[in-house]
Amino acid sequence: MDVWRLFQATTGDHLLTTSETELNHAKQIGYVSEGKIGAVSNSANSGLNPVYRFYNPQKHAHFYTDEASEASSLGNLGYVQEGFLGWC
Image 1 (cartoon, helix red, strand yellow):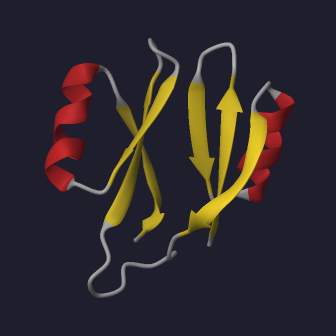
Image 2 (spheres, one colour):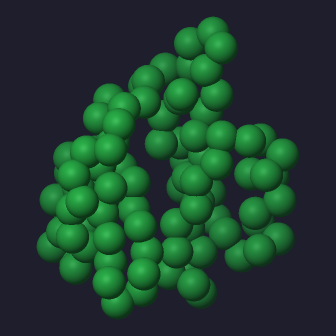
């Protein structure tokens, strides 16, 4: 799946998405598309790690990691998991 990167200048947030629906919605609410930046798998194939996607509503910031130990600690920092971006 293609990964698009968007930027929201007001908050300084970078949003990564594989969803064209989310891409279009984000542009409607002030994000600017920076284009496709790569690709991820849409399934957990052998040897691939999940890319966890988090959002911190107080900071208006997204955070991404493929490290399970890092992902498990982000709740303590105010981040809420939004699911997976994909697998890489």
